[in-house]
Amino acid sequence: MAVKPISCVGIVGAGIMGRGIAQVFIQSGWQVILSDPISKQLTSAIQQIKKGLIREVEKSRLNSGQKDIILKNIRAVTSLLPLADADLVIEAVNEKLDLKLEIFSQIGKICGKKTIFASNTSSISITQLGAAAGFPGRSVGMHFMNPVPLMPLVEIVRGLKTSKKTLSVICEVVKSLNKTPITINDSPGFVSNRVLIPMINEAIFCVYERVGSPEEVDSIVRLGMKHPLGPLALADLIGLDVCLDIMETLHSDFKDSKYRPCPLLQKMVLGGFLGRKSGQGFYVYNSSRDPKKR
Image (cartoon, rainbow, N blue to C red; front, side):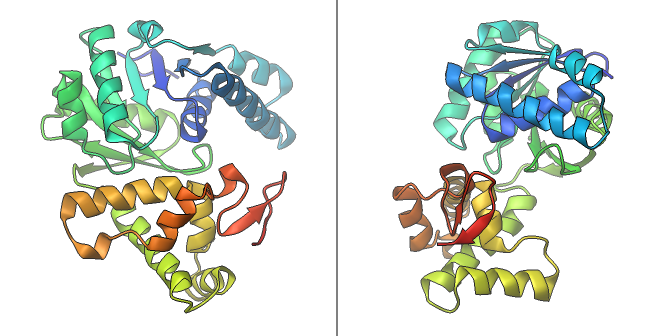
């Protein structure tokens, strides 16, 4: 159910996070405009959303008629201009500062005076993005967790000038998705990735320094610390390129050597070993996404 004053949500970026965010919004009854300049990306996103809804039908959480109605809530476009109709725009593109700044600058010119601008960034300053949009009071972080349909948390990030009204509206939006909003202050990596990504990076160092194999490192964390996924399997799920981008942001912003990216992580990204999305990272993935040893 929509939360006034928001009835239409625009999402920029049809990758893994963008399509996941789109799915949870349309399932909750929102009208969604999904924007991506690459048509193939949009086609793939819609197909993956359909597959996600089919799984919901198979689990008896939806019926076929409900699935068809939900799919009518999404419109895919290759331009940013249709986002002028959106009351909330969520940016969910790659974790590249220049790209995010450009998008925030563009949507700031396209959208109306009441539009709220949100970013799904994992580590980049919301204060800086809000300044780029020209409306820092209406800019906020909405950091969804992967996979979006399954994870109950949304990390809400308060920029220096984010208004109380914006925070209030966004928290109500998140609750309407049956997720829990937790609001924190703007800082590199926020809370989630300031804790998680350095742990993943240290696990990669363990492999790099031959302390243990990926299977051994992951098994110790799973069995000894009761994590559902080991850090290296989780890195593959997140995307090794995303992990590297976040580590580089932490290292650049804090100027602290404890955030230096592991050379093995850098080498794997350069080699195109990005994890599940490329078919190989610390593990090899077949079409069913089952991890296997490299």
